[in-house]
Length: 102
Image 1 (spheres, rainbow, N blue to C red):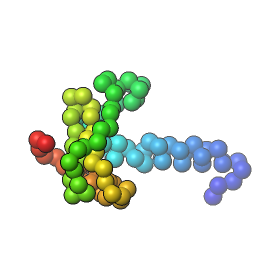
Image 2 (image 1 turned 30 degrees about the vertical axis):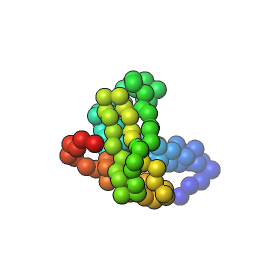
Image 3 (image 1 turned 180 degrees about the vertical axis):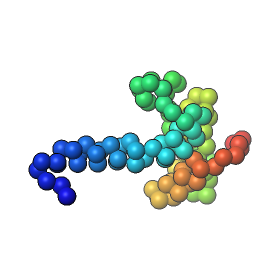
């Protein structure tokens, strides 16, 4: 039960869950996919070199999946017709364990 006495602790715990522990698994599948590493350098994204860059994947359709160039940290993202399609394709791509040239 949240009370005035523990409200600050509740907010701190919820923030940690929403921004850290609650998305840790997804943040690892995304970092591994886009950079080839499962963790960020000390200091986070600000110290990732080269910087993570999102570029439009040309000649792609809603059936296309995102791809990456991990050497330069490029996420090549098709221009999907909806956010839901983008979410589905990005999640599927980040879960893939194979190696594909594109």
